[in-house]
Amino acid sequence: MRGALGRGATVLVPLLLVTACSGGGDTGAAKERPSATPAHGTAPAKTPDAGPLIDADPARLPTTRKAALDLIGRVIAHPDSFGPGVVARQPYESGPDTWPVLGTDCVWRQEKPASSVLATLTRSFEIPAGRGRGPLRLAAIVTVHRTDDGARWEMAESLEETMRCPTQQLRQGEFIGGLGAGALARGEANQVSSEDTLMESGEYRSDELGGPHPYFWEQDQTLRFTVAVTAKASKGWTADDLTELGVRAQSAMLIRLGEAVAKKS
Image (cartoon, rainbow, N blue to C red; front, side, top):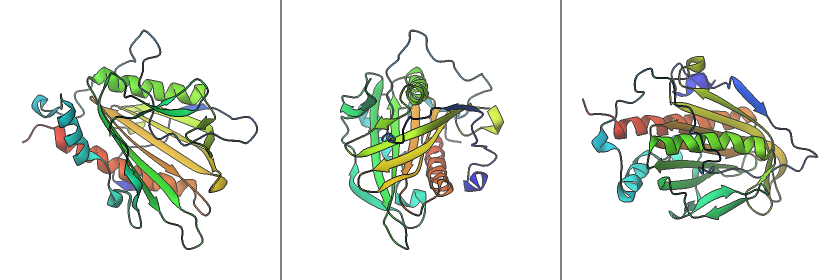
C-alpha cells in the first residue's frame, strides 16, 4: 500500500524498531513537532556518502528567515496533498515564533524556536466527521535549520523523545502512548526519499474523541530541512488509513522540496 503512494521504490517499514510501552492505558499526546536541542556533545552521524540525494543549488538554499518562510510556503502541504475530503482546520497555521518543546515531565509546551532554526511552520487539517466515522486530525510541519547538522540534531532528538517519554501530553486532554518508533537512513531497505526518515505509531486518546485510536507520525530530513506529518484518529479510522494519508502528503512535500532547491537543468 505505501509503495503505491508515490514514493517509488521506497519501503517505509522501519528496520530499527524501538517500542516504548506505556503503563496503565492513559496514553500521551499527539506530537506535532519535535525538539531540536542537542542533548549530547557529539553530533549525530551523517548518512553514508552515496552522492547527494538532491543536487542542490547553493543559491536556492535559504539563509534568511524571509527566504526560509518563502520556501516553506512553497513546500508545505495543503488540503489536497492528503487527498479528497481533507479541509483546513482552524487555526490553520501556527504562529511563526513558537516551537513546541517536550519537557522533562513529558508535556509539550510552546517556547521560542531553537537557535538552530531559521523558520518553521505547522498547518492543521481534518477530515470532518461523517459516514459513521469521527473526525480525523492531521498536521504538516516544515522546518528550515541554519545548517544540515541542525536538521540532523532534530531527527536524533525526535527518536530519543519516544524512548524518554512513552506517554506524552500535547495539551490539556490530549495524549498518545504505547509508542513504537523506527528509523531508516538513506539506502536502508531501499529508502531513497530522504537522508533520514523516522516513523512513529501508537495510541491516541482525548477527552473530546475518546480512545484509544490509532496515531501516526513521520518525519524526514534532507540537507537543512525537516518535513513531517501527524495523524490522529477517532471512531471508525484504522492505522492503515492514517498511514496512507500521511505518506501521501509527506511524499508531495518531499517532491516539492527537491524542486525548490535543486539546480535548474
